[in-house]
Image 1 (spheres, one colour):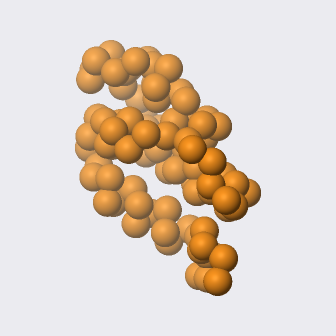
Image 2 (cartoon, rainbow, N blue to C red):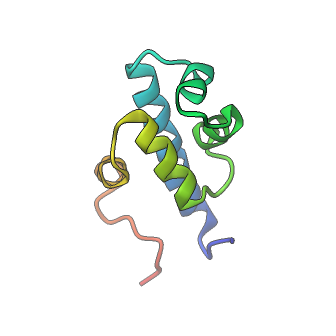
Amino acid sequence: MQHANSKKSKIIFQLLAQELKKEREKQEKSIRLLAYEFDIQPSLISRLENGVNEPKLISIWTVCEALGITPSELLKRLEAKLPEEFSLIEK
């Protein structure tokens, strides 16, 4: 699904990717190790960390659980990094 403002949505996807990778690296885990420990496809983690495609909620949720963080915590981190007046909706 394409958003009307794809440049702004890409900002969100890139921040999501950065936060997931940062959390994984903080735990000193490779993509392969995290995938192995939680029976997740390494390609799923890689796709999320590359921020190229629009991720599915279930994919984000799964990787968050594997990293020991809640999806809401991840979203709070993303919100904190966005500009104060950021909005996907043109007003």
